[in-house]
Amino acid sequence: MKLVELSVRDFVHELGSAKATPGGGSVAALCGALGAALSAMVAGLTRKKERFEDKWHSMEEITGRADRLREHCLGLVQQDTDAYQEVVAALRLPRETDEQGILRREAVQASLKKASAVPLETLRAAEEVMEIAQQAVEQGDPVTITDAGAAVHLAYAAGMIAAYNVRINLSQIEDEGLRFECSQELEERIARLKARFDEMERHLDTRLKG
Image 1 (cartoon, rainbow, N blue to C red):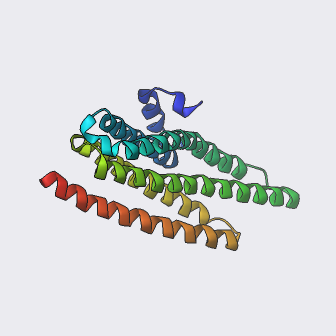
Image 2: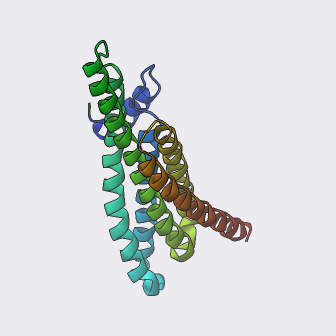
């Protein structure tokens, strides 16, 4: 089942079913795709108006990046579910003999590494979506400010949910070097994402209060 080919109703139904997938990681990637799409919408509406001609170049940049990020995040929706299912399959492998135990352990570790890598990529994408959402807030047509603000929140949600998934999978990985490297990148990206989100919240609050 290809998740991104489902209707919205069917996707939500699958999400609410008593199955482990799709789960939070796929939702994080979907949030990233939605944030990118909203940023593109703001850019497109702004480019339609002659009085914002000085912003058209910036809006074209947003559109190009948003289109790429939207498709990338949609791919991650499926990849996250697939990665989790690989973990489940590895955990179900037999371990009755020493050889089976070794093979199972290797399979579990390999699947956990993939299950960490996918949400980490979602976090990277979310940080980039946050960048174009900020650009949309600051330079887009003022009538689209709430749409751009929604993109900011979706990017933040995408990144933080993805970070949860990275952390829980990293905690079970035995490779200390990989754990350290991923954890360092994770914390740096979370800090940047939070700082940009807080900045945008203050900016949006000021703008919306008039």
